[in-house]
Each structure stands twice: as structure tokens, then as C-alpha cells.
Image 1 (tube, rainbow, N blue to C red):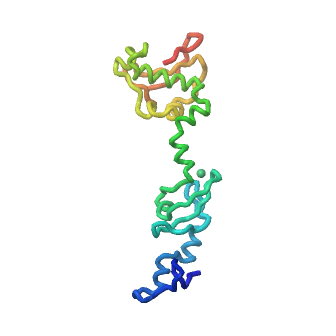
Image 2: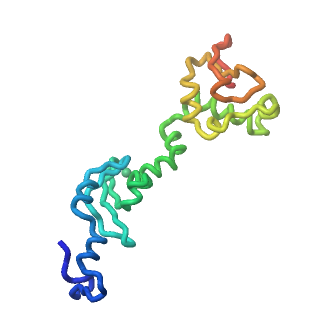
Image 3: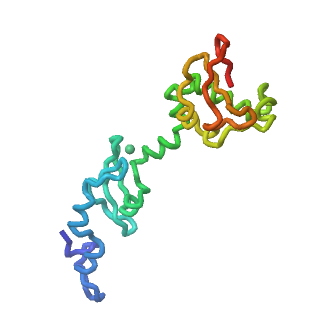
Length: 190
Ligand SMILES: [Zn+2]
């Protein structure tokens, strides 16, 4: 397994005082260490085989649950930094676009979410004086994520329901909002 020649094809020298075996022991993982890593799963990655080192650091060939492959640093896997071939990161970065692609922007909840934010933060919007103009805001989590808003309020029970605030002087946030059935034929937006 360990070549008697160095990477330039010359016989390994032990004249420096460190034996070639000692050097190899430091650089090459023992079979047992390798065995314990093979097949281990790190989020979406499964370790397949050891990869050539880079910058003297151990690396592993990994397959990703999305079907992709990648080479990850040993430390990075153990530290939880390498979790996928890159698909997870791009999914997280594109979550916003993904939400749109999945058609959520066509749902009534999405329209309500958009209008709620315009009324609170868009000074040019006609409803602003009653909302943002009075200091009514949307909580940070809802402001930044439609998915969080949708998770907290759930689906609009019917087209006759509006999202109402329990205390009209307080913010749009999970504890202050509920769906309320209106008498009107079709509900107004918040
Ligand atoms: Zn992947």
C-alpha cells in the first residue's frame, strides 16, 4: 500500500531522522479509521471512499441524496459544515424563488401576506395611514418569510374569512392574529 518511492519517483529517504513508516503513519489514515467513516451519513452526504488529500487534509468522496457527488474535507463533515453536494445551500438561497415557482404566490394567503406588508411598510400604499402610518408593523419573522406566516396562520378557512388582529393597536404577529368570518359576501383583505 505504501510505496517505497516518493512522489517524484525517488526512493524514500530516512536520512532526515524520520522513518518513512513514521511519516506515512501520520499522513495515511489507518484502515480502522477509514472503515469507520465509510457509509457514514452527514445530512445528505454518504461517505463512499477516501479522496486524495488537499493541503495535507483528509478528504472523502461522498454521494449526495440528490444524486450528486462531492469531495468533502474530513473536518468539515464532522463539523457539520459539509451537508450536501451544494444542493442544500442553493435550495436555501433559492427558497424565495422556490416558493414562487411552487405556485404559492397564487394562493390567497400569499396575497394577504403581500398586502399586509404593503399596508405596514409601503408609505405610498392607500391603506398605509391606517396601518404603517399608525405604527402598526409586521413581526420580523413574518416580514421575512411567507412560509413562516403561512405556517403560523394556517390556510384561509374560506374566502369569507379575513385575517384580523385581536388588538387593533398591535402588530401583525402570531399571538395577535386570527381568521375571522365576515358577514360580507367576499372577505376584504387585511
Ligand atoms: Zn445534493
